Length: 265
Image (tube, rainbow, N blue to C red; front, side):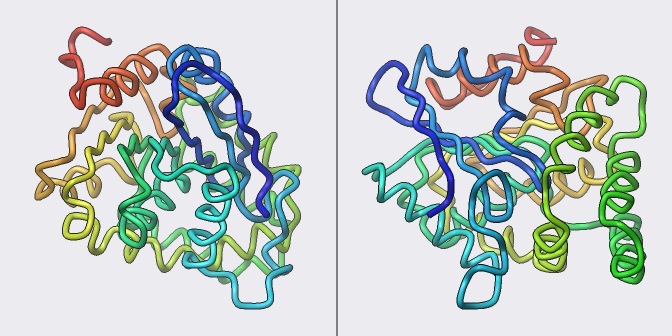
């Protein structure tokens, strides 16, 4: 069973938080108390993170399908039939796959720093990483990607947080997740078809230069998707702009709409 914590809050509904690669639930430290004032909150550590099983402990290949099944096991263990999901980076990728495979378990989705596919630049970086990943410490590779994704001075806090948390991760777990990167595009392939009824809010920074343009293009055909692009913000928008992120996410979950962008910046 994945490591998870149920944080008792207000009401009967649940919000499930999913972190990014190398991260932990601490990435949501600026969301926890705010969301507990409205919902019960569940934080989950994905395989290879925190005290969850390592990626090599399963009696089958480590795949995105396996990750979805493990999250569903957590929902079943707690007794949650349907939840609101909030993800950051890789967590948003996993939520896309949840909406494809088990859309009935997702009530709403808030996807921060979401990745729908890798561009030419990001693919080039990934391929270079694949070529050298066996020859260098994985933290060198992780730090490189952290600086490429979050290069500006105002990204420093989120960049340091991600690097600090990734140091707790084992090399084999990082490489297990890294080998799934070619399948990211498939996690969004049929979201608009299978999850057209699920309200979705995409929140990302305008400075999330590797992913923001492809996200905007790929989600244009989804009438159930709303998008907010925050000025002066990079990939980890819930850390860099927590007040705006919380207000947008809560308003969306409550009312299936968001405040006009000019009112939250």
